[in-house]
Image (spheres, one colour):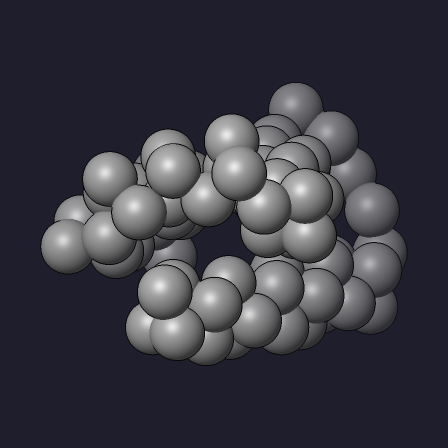
Length: 79
């Protein structure tokens, strides 16, 4: 398991400019990106031991992050 945050710009380097553009011009995308960022940071804090939650809570966070990432990717492909 990596202790590196899953930043969207790193996971989708080919969409770096599109991510920046949509964050500023698409309220729905901006909301999804902000929620992804918040959950991603929370998972990172769990991975490095700054916070502790149950295994089920961590699994739920990871599932939510993946769902958000899928939706974000779908919006990036459509643009």
